[in-house]
Image 1 (cartoon, rainbow, N blue to C red):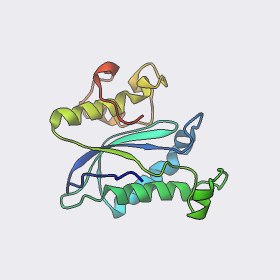
Image 2: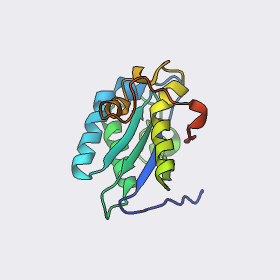
Image 3: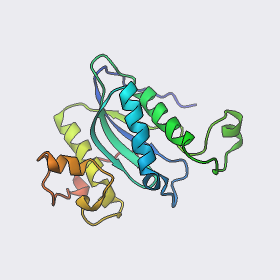
Image 4: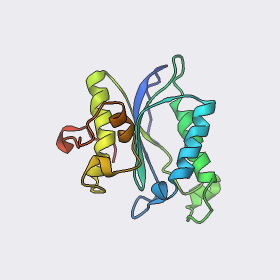
Length: 176
């Protein structure tokens, strides 16, 4: 069993990658985007966090989130988001024997990938990576054309120009 070591820094900012279990030709996240948004809103009401950047792709998502001062429990938030979303889906997925034994759904990968932001440059690389990800995966030819992203909020706030697309080679990798 791997020995996962997570960095728990109260009030910290992290980059996350969260994947569906079956990534091949699966569009569940964009097909059920309203459900995902509702669950995220519900979790934020009970366990606040700031969404610095977020993009939902068909079978995975990336987020840069900041927790409130004194709080480092990002795992709780992801557990609630993933379980809430899973509970809202019909039980049509195939389950492995292990998932059946533990009463798990077959929607999400068990773990997620996280990276604690080290400095402002690290933060900006990851926010750029989140926003350029639909372009990187060939889902659009312009970042502005992907509807499930905080890129549009960042444009409205004057952070990016509307025609920004970024340099895919210059942004960080992130567990895709």
